[in-house]
Length: 236
Ligand code: ADP
Ligand code: MG
Image (cartoon, rainbow, N blue to C red; front, top):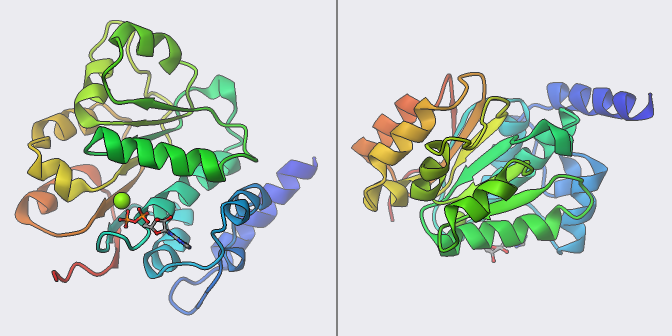
């Protein structure tokens, strides 16, 4: 079948791609699908930022990643592109349930991620959803079972996990912890620990942060397996 061949070819290109020696400058230099490339181009994302160039290839190789880069460096696409590619290569469909979970510290940041995702995801068939509170848990829960990529705040996600007919994470392929340092600053340590311990160990995890700390090290140990660090954690 044509799509299977195309995905095989992508997998081969990813395998051959050497993040250390490759100096990709543009998204089109990366082994990513035409659907994602098209979405990026339409949203006027053409050139890679440093953190995107360093992290996306490692994420594509299915490694866990600790990404460190200051605010404004482009961390959102550094994880959204791998999320889309992971599900694309898994030939994820609307019937496969939750494939990726993205956790963000605030409603505002979660909404921003959702907006970027809708901007670049127009040529993929995945459903995306936001759980950030403000709406009835039941109202959200009815819709959540049909969502492939879920973005939410820690408290609200855990709330859904604790529901009787809660969030089904059995098939989860990828967990993204965005602005992990801010999550910890805001007191979400226990909530994050509880969420992570509910997830299948086979998933891939990407953790992004602007700064480093002892509590971030603890979260890293708990949530990442055999991970690679990209970017710089030097404080400004
Ligand atoms: P961070 O999460 O690291 O603070 P964001 O992902 O929010 O950074 O990106 C910061 C800004 O840079 C946003 O306005 C975003 O649209 C823009 N941006 C990100 N990546 C690119 C890119 N590859 N090309 C052009 N603009 C980009
Ligand atoms: Mg960000």
